[in-house]
Length: 200
Image (cartoon, rainbow, N blue to C red; front, side, top):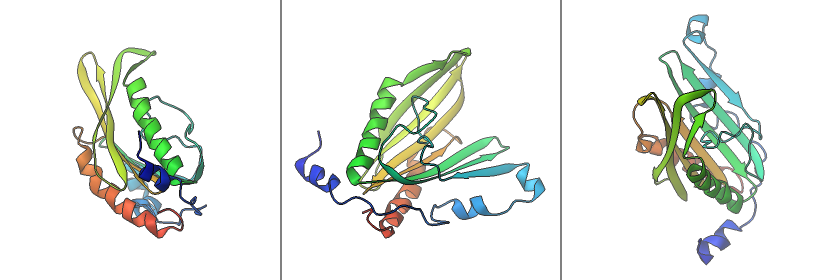
């Protein structure tokens, strides 16, 4: 249960941001830089401002956003032939309360969909987990591990943080589950979003 003080804070005036400035995200300049044909065969980026894009940490596998009251969003995904991948996502909500609700919803979804499988691949098992994290006003580490025939074949590490009416998510599938490695990026963005009108 949130405290009365936090309830009052989350009910403060809504964000007035309706568009995220170009090159605002930490990875955005690299994502927008043209690639040579050789580079494009080895790595690539996708940038989306769709409000309907699901959260990059998505335990229940929704194909569209299920959180409410978004006013602006930007998602950047990166892949390489290593193979590896990462993502950065910033979602601005109408109010801090709406952003807090989105974070709480993620916590609930992790519990509800912590263990699941792919019906088309019965031997593939997916397990989600959470851990403590510190960034912005509140944050959690979150990620998944996939196992096939008892062996780990992929680990995704993520962190989701809230600052005012903004939610920021960073993910990577490189290395073991270690959300602490993404904390600095979340902290940088948590400070940066306060430059946007009405967010903090």
